[in-house]
Length: 322
Image (cartoon, rainbow, N blue to C red):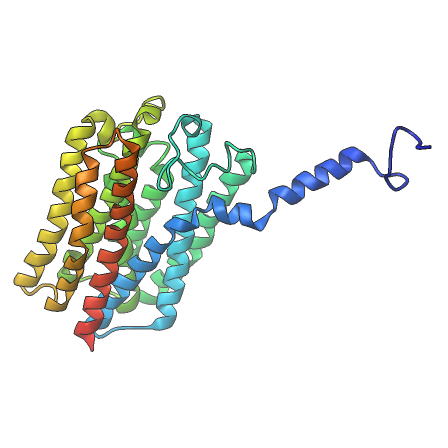
């Protein structure tokens, strides 16, 4: 016979304690924490740092150790953006209304109750805090001119979801903070200065990352309206937003060609034009955003364009450096 209503448990064991312990173990499941960081998006900081480092290599400066440390900093910043975005989307209840796709709609961790909002908030905050000493280190080692770039990048990370998204054309923020600035930062970390050719070479990254966020916003438009967000698909409508997306895609390739023709970028960077067929598919799909069967393949092609174009630009600079 059992005593005190307990069955098949060691003497003195409280079932509520066992339940809490089990829940805590679940909350600290490493796989859940990894999925909350949305690892499928973490190839972006890798290609950004690679591109910035490759541009510096072509200019005669490369330090592999600096590149690795810079990559760690960028990964921490990008995880911070992903996680804090999840937190604010859950608090505003946007995540409960979005159409989940492989490329949008959040990680799904908070709506499923697999982590608590407070845990996710501190996860994103701590990742950001851990990135700060890396920025300070490179400022001391390579020069104070890195500070304005770091400051603007930090603002883009902290203010994006709670503030910037509620103002017109918020897509500029990820384009700058997670596109152009990381490439320039990776370049500065190697060289200790900026150059106009490096700035020109970093512009395509800004356009591509802006477009990455823009196309991924299409399925979320109705849900984003409930949180008073001002994304282009909301303020302009899907058709006009698709025109903007298409124009920026075309501008990216024209920018690369123009920079090569004016000898600002090496001719070997034209290898990046190999992604054009995927861009055409993404553009076509952007005009059919109401059809998930068409917009999801378009988003997939857009991811290929964003990652492969920057990777190939980096390869082009490496070839020019050899």
